[in-house]
Length: 404
Image 1 (cartoon, rainbow, N blue to C red):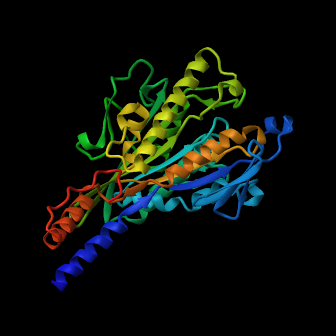
Image 2 (cartoon, rainbow, N blue to C red):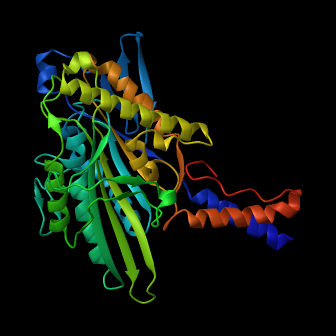
Image 3 (cartoon, helix red, strand yellow):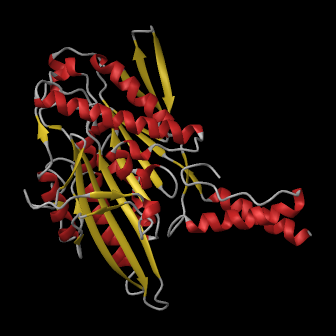
């Protein structure tokens, strides 16, 4: 009896260890030149390393949120590309270890999402693709690529690897393959993880490219990013008008045992939410803005369902949430960058972004190397051991995306 009790305790602790929350990092950029010309005051600042404070003049009070990390101010104050990636690199290692990892950027248009994710000059800007070393302006994506191949090289010859990359954009609610030439794209069908043979979200008809080096991967991502839909608005001279989703699947084979582990690293640069009155969107840009806001609303509905413990998670309500369904709930290690403007002119949008981020922080995932099967097996065994004690039938394994 004592041995069975100890076994239940061990299983319970192991299940608890597999739980993980979405980590949320907040980055407040410096005032832009347009905001300086507009004589905007700074209404957003960091308070220590984990708190952000917004002067809410509308309600006559300051509002404070706590997150995992907060950066604000200039590069001299530590708000650098290198600093924000310092605590992010371990996630790349997790993807090599067989975990499903997602890093995504969220915020209003012009808040610095694309700069954070890709950096100055695009994904290859300021990067030595021969060595994987990055200059000060390089963003999360090139740094992640460099770290990925550093880890792979470090683990040779015990393991051999295969890295494949896919790149898609969601534009006007339609999915586009950024690796397909114009007019050559096949019909794309999104298959959720539960219906795919890999246990990951798969896009049937999409192009999958093998990357054997830093240069291969950077060149592939850069070529795809160049095909992304952008245009100029009153809020942002180079506004992303689509959501960009870049996924790398890393398959590692143990050279001694022949066992294979598959992990996934997904980088997502979301298009920014916008108020049409501020951005001046009209005509096609207005339709783009409406589509962007619609998709972000669907993302909000998924987060709300995950945090409330709903039995139904509305991933199928929009292609964006379908594409991110293996990144937000269930078997995922997820990091969210919330990018914000410090200007009082944008206080309302900044508060909305931080409120959304606070809800994301309450999502609990079950991160398991190699997929969700391990967690479900542990839960079944734990329920089996509990059943004789309380006279109840074993419970069904917890659904992905819900706390166990």
